[in-house]
Length: 232
Length: 253
Image 1 (tube, each protein chain N blue to C red):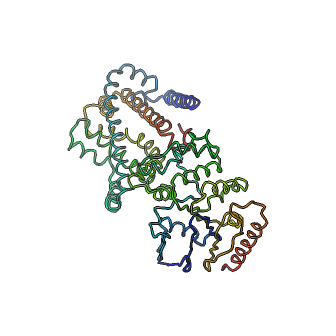
Image 2: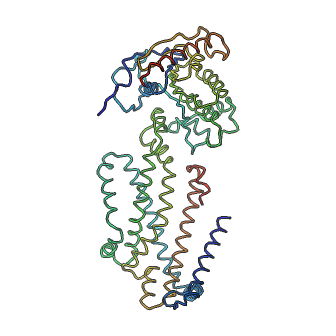
Image 3: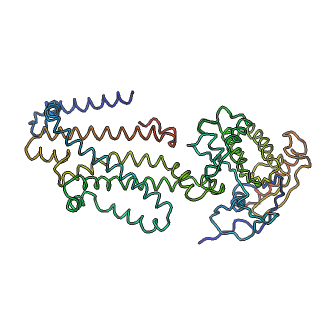
């Protein structure tokens, strides 16, 4: 069988209670790293270790959110937000879910089916489903990349607010998103993993913050160089 | 309502063409009776037809329900167990190499002339389309749903119950619609092979006595029963299962 190495040996550290951004072009294996951390199948073999600072279990303390909102079409908005409880057969907390739903302005849509919502609204519901899991570590796999620019900016701010105090690992191919949100920045290319310095101010940074824009341009530069170097 | 109107127009056209054909060709009524004759035969034999139709209807419905339940259960079992996929799935596919009609005489030999072999025939005919449609549906659960459920710590049983099965309902509905059309075939073939009751038996009997209009009357009753059954199954799919079907399915009545 044709075996292929997906990525060179790498080591990635994620700061507790911070946003770590993993930036890179499509197809370099960013999502695979998230799947490894979440303990999901990757269709290949992996050798290495994934550990938490307190050496506790990792996969069971992790929740993830993907570009596809993955709302179950046969459940209402409220039921989707409470999905974790339904799936574990334990108690879910509909009162808390309702509070969160009202907080993001979807109170009127709580009993509607996902098909009636817009893309931005669906992704807000997915965000709430993620926060309802109450896990300390949140993995985000390009959750906002399918949204229009305005909605995306609003979602970044909402996510930063909702996920405050949690450890977030965000995979993205958007330098602007990484520059806005990161406490810690990694760039994954075919050649390997490197670090970059995020702006000094605390995230979420304003869209027009000069140091954020400079960082964004710098990141884009790195990505473009790596694009040139990619074999044809 | 518009669909019902269209269906009526189509039915009326068929009847008109049929009557026109009888008039135009002058074919004798013991070869092809016109719709008026058949209607008259239905009127004259309404009790007889009703009694036999009831028997056939029971066979069809019991067979359809049993076959659907067994088929769906098999699909779930196949989806849950790798051993079942390895050993049962090939047997299932191979079993389709034997035409169900060919085993009808054997079923009659084993089970006698009552309704049982007809029900079993119907079950056999319904079982495969349901099992294969459900199995496909269960296997085609979007991977993202499964990843999400696993990362939430759901057990295999709960993933089956709350994610795979609901996600497979559209495939199940497709299988059920097919099965509803196949089911009467099983019952009728079973009756042809050997019975003392049912529309299939009545058709053979009428044919033997050269009562061609009664034969056609039984056929017409069977056709109506099949169409009504399919409509009811469709109603069930579009209403009871609406929550699980993609929206475009709602107007497929």
